[in-house]
Image (cartoon, rainbow, N blue to C red; front, top):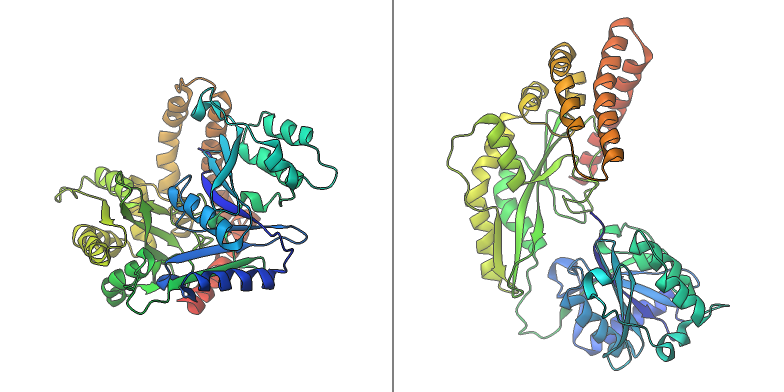
Length: 455
């Protein structure tokens, strides 16, 4: 699966410094009736990214979804507000990139695509206007070069964007920037804005509501809210087991509604931590975080859970309706929390996790096997299952999958023999096992220090 993201490039037609641009942006927002505020109270929340010697500033928001109307409306409004040109960039599954240019009037003036646009537009693929785009060509770039880059074939649309960016004076890295990539550094600036009107109803974001509603229930159970960009409630059991509760946004069929689902995770202090500044279901975090729908399905099936089936895992509320948002969060608690607490309370030790891992695999199970010294039992089970696993992989019949099959075999083999080597080294005093335990203890100490600071 490819990438989906949306951002906007703002043309700095006055060649302002970073500080001057931010001042201008805040001043113009002020003229429209908005003042800066904390992100949890904001009606508009943006991330601005700057690059040296570049006349384009990237702006994005965690509220943007690929190609949604929010980002397009913002792009036109910002172009008009700053009296400049803005380019809204949408990447769809890494197949295709759509670039829409908005002029000083705030209206869309032109658009074109990069990548496999015929999959989405058919034969009616929009072509760029030379009169509009030629003014942004920089250095020795030519209109012919612009079209050559735009029309080239790319496996990933991001490659085409990176090549096009310097042709029109943009930064090759910033044109691929999204809210998911927003780490804390001097080039990234977060700005939140709220209406100045006294009678304006206070806006409550999903982040803030989740912290408040779930905090009332989780904190008495020993969970604490992590000081991170994305809300995570974390409980550390006996300096060994990490239990995590968070959420992710869900799309609704009706654009007037928004939704969310609850995610949980379980890990060890001996393992590298997930990225708490990103949402639970990013590639970085799927090693131990699961959405409750898939988790409940696999866990219940593995353990033959006979309790009443949970009817719903996604919850929806009307946009801007605080009462519906809070009620949806409370409803999710009623439906889901009993199962979550039951699972967490039943798995608070390494031995619990070892028993869990035999029926329900989770990230870090190999490490549980090593740390609990249950390698003999595990290897015995793996030796019986290993030939069947390889046979199952060999029977895969999908087209164009020989490389994937080889990788799957290699990973399965590597996983088996990695545990075996550690076991042998442990018995003979070898270096591999000692190095593993040394690294695990160092990681554990670093993680506990992190939690001491940020919990």
